[in-house]
Length: 87
Image (tube, rainbow, N blue to C red; front, side):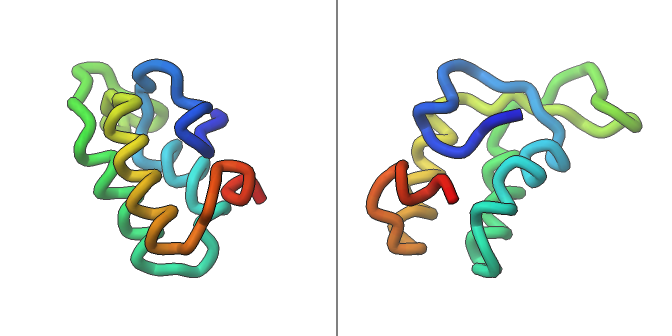
């Protein structure tokens, strides 16, 4: 799953928390605050009645939620643009 910048999120995504973390944590580095916000982002999504791998809860992540999260994290980490985000 490719979710790294707002340009990558063109529509709602249905993801487990583990899937979202697997996509985003590698680019956040060691910043604990940024890492913790991934779970916050996931919890903002609407719960789905279906379950993911291993029975994990799935949520719908909307592009607007992701853009807001991205802007907050980018500002906090000093990232100037989407090109700098993709490491």
